[in-house]
Structures are given as C-alpha cells and as structure tokens.
Length: 417
Length: 98
Ligand SMILES: Cc1cc2nc3c(=O)[nH]c(=O)nc-3n(C[C@H](O)[C@H](O)[C@H](O)COP(=O)(O)OP(=O)(O)OC[C@H]3O[C@@H](n4cnc5c(N)ncnc54)[C@H](O)[C@@H]3O)c2cc1C
Ligand SMILES: [Zn+2]
Image (cartoon, rainbow over all chains, first blue to last red; front, side, top):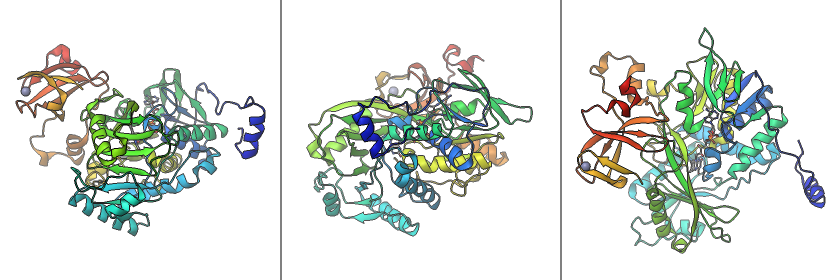
C-alpha cells in the first residue's frame, strides 16, 4: 500500500501524479474463505477491516453486487452525532464517534471528519421538553449535548431565521459540538484500501443469490453471480436489501425498506458553518467542502426498492429550508436521489447472531447509520470473530422484538439521521 | 408522485392517500394461545419483498375508505387495486395463483 504523507504527496506532485497505484486490488472471488461479508458499504468494508486488523482474520472477502459505497454509504447526508436518548444507543453511537475522531490517522486516509457541531431545532413545547430530556440523559452518559436559546442558536448559525412570525418558530436548540460530517465516499474507500492492504479481497459486481447450509443447518457458503464460495462464517450487511438476503437463509426479519431522499444545490462559497436538523418541519442541511448545500429530505410512506422517491417529498423539505434560511430562497438545486433504508419497528439497529449458526446480521440502520459506521463495523467484527456479541452490541438482538426489550429511539423522538 | 386508482373514486394523485402497510396480515383469533415467537411474528415480521407487494391504502382526502393494492416495489407500478374483502385477480399476485 502506498502510504499518504506530506512527503509522498509532494514527491508525486513533482512527478506529475503519474506513479499512483490503484488504492485496492480488483479481486476475483476465490473458492473458499474463512468468512465472507455480503455488502460493500461502509459497515461491511469496516467490518472486514476490523476482522483483519484486530482479529487476524485475513483470508476473508467483501462481496458487493455493484460498486463499493454505491448503496446508502454514497447516498447519505453524512450527519454524525451521538446524542441518542437510551443508554444502549448512547454507548453504541458514542463508541463510533470516538473512532471517527482518530479514523483518518488509523486508516492513513483522509475521511474529512469535521466536528462542526450538529444543532437540532425545537419548534414546539414538546420538542423543548424532549430535547432537554436528551441533554440531561446524554450528560449522565458522558455524551456532550447542550441546550441553546433561540438567540444562542442564531449566534451559532447566523443564517437561521428566529423570527416569531414563522409558521413553526424556533424556540431553542440542542447542540452537540462533537457532531459534524465526514466525506461519505472516503469512508468506503479508506476502509477498502486499508482492508485490502491486510489481504482482504474486495469483490465488486458480485451479487449474492443464495446462502448454502449444511445438514446441521449451519452456513457453509454462498452462491453468487460469480460462482459458489465456501465460508463457515457469513455476515450480512446489506442495508435496504437485508430482507431479501436473509430470505435466502429462510429467515424473516422485522424490517421494511423505504426510499429516503437527499438533494444538493449548486456549489457556493462557504456560507453555512454547521449542521442544522429539524425533525418537526423535516429538514436537514449542511454545506459540503465542495460548496454544495447538502439537504436531507424524508422517506416515502410505502415499501419500495426504487431508489427514487416522490418529488413532493423533497419539495416539502425545501419549503422548510426556505422558511428557516431565507437567504437560500433563490438557490438552485443540482440533483436529487434516493437510497433504500431498512427500518426496524423501534428505529434501532440489529447487530447480532441469527438463529442460523455461522450467519450474522448487521442491519436496521434505517435513516441514520452513517454516523455509526466505525462503531458498528468494530463491534460486528467482534461478533463474527468471537461468535459472541461485544458488550456494546449485546442489546441489539433480533430477539428483542419478541422479548419486548426494544431500544425505542423512535418513541424518543430524536429519530432521523 | 404516484397515480393511484381508488376502487371507489378512480385515479387520484398519491398525496390524497395514506399508506396502511402490508395487507392481509390477519390478527390472530386467540392471541393468548400464541407462543411469544408467533405473537412477535404477527406484530413485527413483514414480507418486505423486492417485487410484488399486497398493501393497504386509504383515500384519506377523498372517499376516506380503505382498499388494497398490489404494487411492484422495484418499479412502483400498481398492478391492481381492489376493495377490502375482495381477493386480487390471480394473475396480479403470484401468491394468489399458487
Ligand atoms: C438519502 C439518505 C440520507 C442519509 N443521511 C444520513 C445521515 O445524515 N447520517 C447518518 O448517520 N445516516 C444517514 N443515512 C443512513 C446511512 O446512509 C445508512 O444507514 C448507512 O450508510 C448504511 O451503511 P451500510 O454499509 O450498512 O449500507 P450500504 O452502504 O447501503 O451498503 C450495503 C451494500 O450491500 C450491497 N448488497 C445488497 N444486496 C446484496 C447482495 N445480494 N449481494 C451483494 N451485495 C449486496 C448493496 O449494493 C450495498 O452497496 C442516510 C441514508 C440515505 C439514503
Ligand atoms: Zn376514493
């Protein structure tokens, strides 16, 4: 692996950038591995990296039906925060946030993690009470989150309109200063490059079409569009397609898949200093380092794998953006798109063993799993390597729905991204 | 935006409707008799298919009635809509033809 440093960049700049090599091998699948991971998004690639780097499992492969990062990883609005309500969630998302802080150095790849602060707006009495409850719960868990008055919120984000005349006026906000954004593609590429350097095969254009099981019911391998692959351990990290892949092993899951949309504006000079989210009027916005406003919209109401979504959904979001930030009223939008998100009934993920020996699943991240990528990958690698969950993901089982031990971030209101 | 054919009113834009989840998920007659697994399956497991899906819709801003539809979840194309209590035409839904 060619290591990035100021010297290596300078040397290649003088050489006309001619001597860079591909960042990972275009591997063809082998007949057998010690483990395979289905899905080359950030969570799957990260899992492979931690399996290789922390658990010494290097004879492994990531199988991706399209190109790596082409799923939700490359389609998301990259909001990172950890101020979730429940103890279980706070532990999981804050584990991820701590890994984000050192990730560029760990991977020797700039993932552009930028803790510019994530501010969540409160528009009614319910929001105020819920956000204050979050602030207190987060403090008790050692997670930073603070309450701002409307004036303090505008001081933190000057474009914000705090006029009491708004249809949904801003009554205050919760701010997590360690929250922010990262470069989505770089996360997939950085993990792929680092995993490849440790011997992991990254196999693209390889769709898993079946899961093979032995007479005892345990996993023995997978069928793919590029042939059969034997493996005693298989990890499913397929986001919106999890129900389809789990179905190949005869398992039904508490998931439904919905299109979630985002859009970007034409690029402009730096105008927007932080991330602002409003669950109530449904808008999320930040500015990328390229200068585009990155705007998150909502989900369609119905199950779909179309990766598009209806136009009235982003139109509704733009109504809210224009009201909250009047200076954007004449901005032009460049493009919009959708990703298929896998949502659980309690809006918390499932990172667990399955009833099939040797088969593991990491799914249910829904509208908000990018922020968890390093933490999710790290504890899932532990689960696959040790055949037992890490203490952090132990509560995130498939069985919690049967046992009534939900981690109900949905009811806790701070859902979405 | 989808154009949805309400069996009572005809084709109307999607924003007149609300989605009601998977259709034909019958509430068990005697929940007390179920195992925890069977009860959880009724509450939380859904077929979530990549392909044809039978689902409920309500024409909230129209006749306000519930009805069912079969829609392809890849193209979002509505194969058919039908009234509650009716079964979809066999060719609309592979499961009904079986
Ligand atoms: C518009 C949008 C905005 C979002 N905004 C945010 C945000 O601001 N903050 C946040 O934290 N989260 C956000 N999310 C959610 C976040 O993107 C996801 O939770 C996260 O990226 C999931 O990562 P993943 O690696 O599990 O999935 P993915 O990146 O989707 O990877 C799964 C991969 O599995 C592959 N696959 C599927 N089936 C097969 C098969 N049979 N064989 C082989 N490969 C297969 C897919 O092609 C895909 O590449 C957003 C999502 C969307 C769509
Ligand atoms: Zn009607």
